[in-house]
Length: 306
Image (tube, rainbow, N blue to C red; front, top):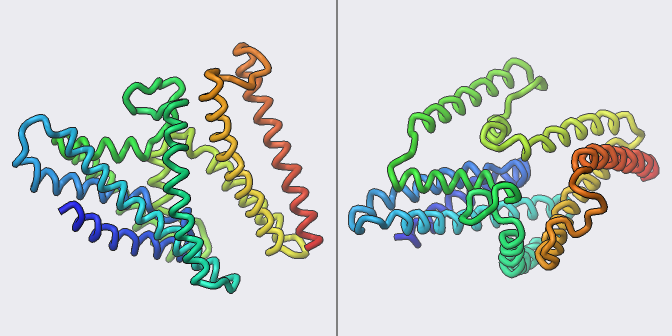
């Protein structure tokens, strides 16, 4: 039954996420929302078809099985995201599809080898918020994973607040209708993307704040680039810079976690004591903003010379 569920749901989910990734990009693909639907469906099927035949106290095993099934479907959806995004990009640059497919196969294999030890390193160094034994003061937040886990537990144990889910569904429908009305009222006017609103509702501010800041900076840069002699080239260079900042931050975070884990010191590269923590945050923010400004001025000059 589990295999049939995974095959059927993976087919549907990969079609949806792959289509959205190819249409508007993998970053806008509704992977989290799809995962929420999958875990609810899996948990409901287990409650109806399996739980009545098990002895009391089997709820934890059922929750684990539901999350395991969901993780497989998530992996399939992620690969579909990457596949369609890659093929779309390859078409734009006249790449060879067969070679792209080989690269994707290699990427899946390498990811399967690299991701587990990285996650284990982060778990060992910081832990994840909500996980057993994790220190809330230093654990890494995992709001999406926490939400999916809570839904699985709630459905299987019968503690899901369905009224809140219904309220959320109603809000979602209202936002979709409002977004369509805004689109019909003014073709190029302000819109209310349902996915962005949903992410803003259930993700904490600490996660979404820099996304908003980045969107504002990106909008400013696009308008500024539009006044340049070669606006499209300038915009593409700006996207490359932003992508490099994102990837670089992720890589440095993993490297730093490794340093913390192997040194046994929470602040292995600290230059000052904890009493300087608040000024350090402000100074770091100012330095980061100044660095970004300098880099984007450099990008502007490169765009003119392109």
